[in-house]
Amino acid sequence: MEHLYCEFLFKPTDELSKLETGEWSMDYDDIDDFFHYIEKLQEFKIPLNLKPIKSEIYQEEV
Image (cartoon, rainbow, N blue to C red; front, side, top):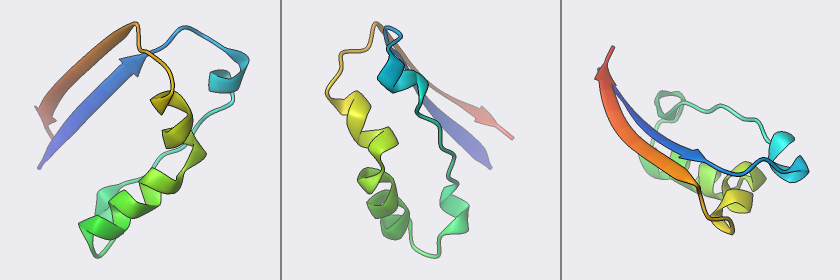
């Protein structure tokens, strides 16, 4: 199994400091259900309107 990480660093704001969630795709029977759920989350929507100051994408074997 491997983890794919997509990390985005934003300038700190009060709105962002309140965001926290954790979901695992393996908890869903269908990957489309997982993506549909994630895309509805405020924790997903709010940062879409912001510009990250840094981003990093990598994977690791677990």
